[in-house]
Length: 358
Length: 273
Image 1 (tube, rainbow over the protein chains, first blue to last red):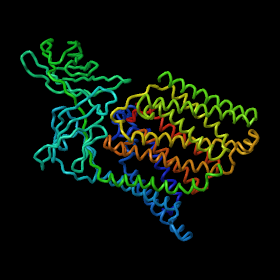
Image 2 (cartoon, each protein chain N blue to C red):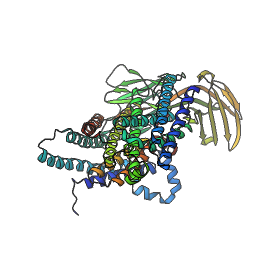
Image 3 (cartoon, rainbow over the protein chains, first blue to last red):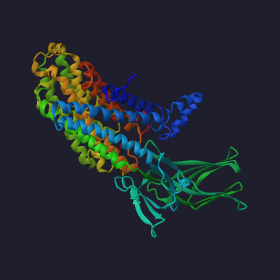
Image 4 (cartoon, chains in turn blue, brown):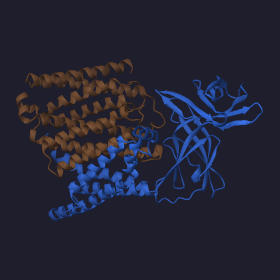
């Protein structure tokens, strides 16, 4: 079969395939986008999940067919438009009419966008830290909570560390700085750390990287559980993700301690000012599936039950901080704007001529 | 909603309903002149919705584009505005009032089922991109709605129109309609494109990702591509007029779903309010 790479028919088929791709990704939860839903799907499909896995339907945007499709579309756009405007030029002897100029700019911009998107995918880096106040993390592969690495990205690690000094939350509704994180960055090559306050819409741009404040934050109480003979069973910051249920914020989580066969449930109860010092904790502890303790605990207060002592000496906040490198972003945005400009230029003669006979 | 706001909101809804009722009556009773009466109610609806928008803006301190409810009412306002402009250009488009008022009435009815309180801007939304992004989204949707309204009229057929609306003054020149639809489709594509691009730039600033395949992004891309397909099948393959009209209407459904329906089906980071 002979394929004509410049035909509009092929463009039509390719765009339809692209739409089908996108619709599939809307139906089937994608691995790199929504991990919880994937697990649900795996459970409900059971043994048949391998079909989705084999066809790569759960990772459409990183699977080869998607890139082949984009590549073919770029080829079709380039060759097709070149041929078309060659014909137009032969007949009209100029391409500077707004109608043709707009169309050329628009279609070539699409090619630029496709190339930008593919290059950016190949060279991008995106790492997410989960940080508690006062904590310092290093730019090592292991210290990231999640990493999305482009196949050709060869960024070297270990050249800086990030310290989260403070998360400020203001309850004044309508205040522009409702949530913000105060971070310090110490890079190998500098003696002094760079301090910056980052919040949504205000990332820190530094050294070809962007450091973004993650959308969600929660509380991290330090839980200290000792036996009567002072053996330490648990002493750690428990990161509790904030859940929002019908507009109500819930800070609730549990921890399983295997050596004691103990399940530790905690809920952070806040007063209306969300003042950390007046926070209470609703605690339920089950030992060998029997409830051994239930009660409300204040910060720094100690309770005794069975042979255990429980204290919550500190309460901190935690958040996600993401480190992003997108080297071809400007190319993509350039493509975006020139595509819009092309569409507008091409549209002007239409309204000029034809608005009289509605 | 404050009491003043709700007076104007309900006045607008009522007037839209009356507009639709009278314009339908004009077809049922074959009295084209009734369309002129229904236009009076349309003006009333437009004015009350404008007052509602202004009151809302003053009360909340930001343009009314933020909650789903506001986005819907403002889209209706923009559809009205677009219709007024078409009216100015050509007085022969009176009949478009039927689909326009039907759509507006349905959307106003849908919007009242949602929380109507105006919300304060959160830190993620308090940004100049919100107004660029949201205003282009609503105006893009309004343009596509107008395109589909023309399509509905075209699908009804020339004979049917002449039989039910006797004076030719009130119906557009039948053969020119598809060309007009094409213009609105291209304009809509530009506006919807600006919406996607501005959203993408904003998302990069806010979250560090210019494109995250979020359900709303995904469906707005689907509708943009669909309209692109409709456009190319019209220009490239000389698609028949009727089929072209049907495709325009079908693509408009995806626009409506992308803008207002996604939240019912998916969990999305595009949280309104």
